[in-house]
Length: 205
Image (cartoon, rainbow, N blue to C red; front, side):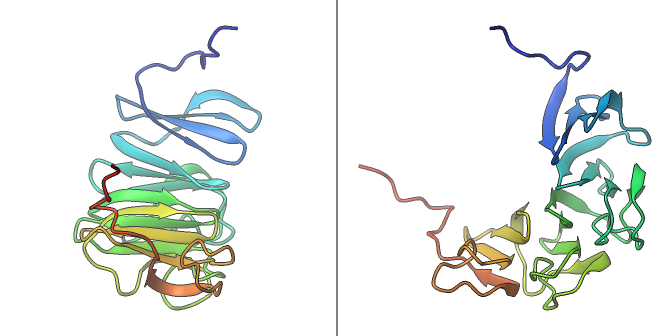
């Protein structure tokens, strides 16, 4: 059998998947979507995009100017526009600038800024926003106690941040020990995960 090629797509630099749909970022800074019963189409209102991320049913796009744009489901405020309105077209996330990285979780979102801080919005019932509370936020809030962060990732109901010293901080759902395996309580603020320093891996013989 030959390769299954998505017809009409070329020059793709990055891809992302939601629950029932897909996104592709092209070299010209445009974003394209397909799935969920719809054919391939360009996402209107977006240009100069440099990275994309998809959660369960919502999407994030980081533009070259450091702003973040979002669309899709918004029942928990995961679009960060201050409302709970489902958006078919991208809207700018309120009050965010200087963003270098984005991550979309199940129903929450993360952004890493140039100053090494992390900001979150959306569902927070498991502590996945890292602001010390277990409620949702429809606008970005600063994750507590984090600095010198270099990378971020969002799981369905938890979040991770990699720091410049090679350590990882985690917060949110911990039922399976995905943050710290010595106990299973959810974590509403970042804690140091139980793992080796990722910047200095132990060489194998």
